[in-house]
Image (cartoon, rainbow, N blue to C red; front, top):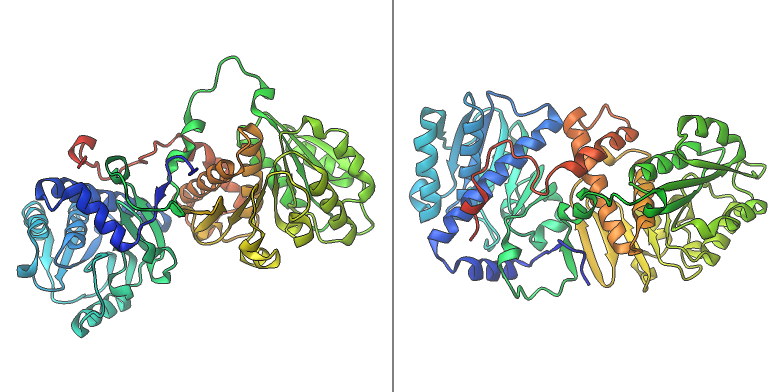
Length: 504
C-alpha cells in the first residue's frame, strides 16, 4: 500500500512512456502542458528567490535554451517572469542556434520575443552577472557525451556570477551546477542523488491523474503536499481533547535540556489532544512555566543528570492513557538511561517514535510495537542502516532530501533545505511526527510522511520569510499553520492560466 497522493519516481525510459501515453506526439496536447510547466517553473523560482531577499524588480535573466521541450519550458518561464516584473530583462543563448528549435520551442520563442520586445535579446555567451539562470539545454532524452562547444557554454554559466541557477527537469549533461532542479510532471531517477541537481522541486502537472500503467513497481516515490489534506479539513464539531490522542514524550537530561522542550512544543502544534512529558525533576518548574499546555512529570535523576531506572514506574502507571510515545530527545547516553530506554521500548505496546540518543541497536531492536526511527546519516550507520527494516518499522532518513523507508518502498520528501541544517530541527520533527502518530489511525508510515512533509514546507516558508541564516530553529513552529493552510497547489506569484487550460 502506498502513501496517498505520492507519485512514482520514474526512470527516463518510463518518463518517456508516460509522455507518449499522455500526448502521443500531438502538439495540441503538448503545448498546454508546456505552458503549464514553464509557468510552474517561474512561480517556483520566484518563491525560492525569497530565501535570498526576493527577485529583484530589475532582474537579469539568462536562458540557456536547447532544441526541444526543455528549451521551450525555460523560455515560457522567462516570459512569465518578465510579465510579472516589467523592469526585468532576459538574455537567451540558443545552444544549437534558433533555427534548430523544434516546433513547440520555436513557438515559445516567438511568443516570448513578441510579448517582451526589446526586453529580451539573443546573446552569444554569458555576459556579466545575472540574477537567475534557467538551464533548458537538454532533457531526459539526452544521450552523452555533450559536444565540446556545449560543455564550454555550461562551464561559462557555472562560472558566471549568478545569484540562483535553476535546471529544467535535469541539469544539462550532468554538468550544469543547479541550486534548484524543477522536475516537471514527474521526478526522474537521475536527479534523486545528483549533487549537481541542488534542491529538487517537484512540479506536479497532473500527469498521474491522467495516465495509467506506468510500469512502476511503487518502490521509489515522491511525496506531495496533498498528503496533508486530512489535516486541512474541518474537524468534527462533536469532539474533545481525547478525540485527538495523547502523546507521551520521554527525554531530557542535565546536559541536553532544550531538545525535549522543542519536541514537546512541536507535538503541541501537531493537533494532538494531550501531551505528557517525562523529564528530569529539576527541569519541570522552568518547562511548565514556559509550556503550560503540556503535563510535566518529574523523573528521578542519575548523578550525571539523566533519567534514572527507578523512575520507570512513573511511565508504567500512566502508559495505558497514551496513544503514542516519543523517546530520545536530549536523553543523553548514560548506561543507566540507555538501560531504561531499552526497557521502555521493549515492553511498551503503543506505537512510538525513537529519536536521537535512543537510536542504539539494542534499543531500536527491542520489543514489537510499531515504531518510527528518525536517524540522521551517522545515527543510521550506528543502528545498522536499512538492515534493521522489518514489518512494523519505518525509518525516516534525515538529510538534504529526507527519505522514508517502509514496506519495501522509499518515499522522498524534497521540501526543507539548508535552513534545517541546525541543531534542534530533528527534535521538532520527532515531536511533530509523534503528535500525528498519536492522533491515529496508528499508521507509522502515514504519520511519518505527514510529519516530514509538513516540517519541510514550514522550513521552506521560514526561509522565504527570514532567509536561511539569521533564524532560530524554533521559529519553524510559527510557520506550521501557514504551511498547512496553503493550498495543495501552493501560491502562484506568476498567475498561471486556469487549470483547465493545462489538462492533457
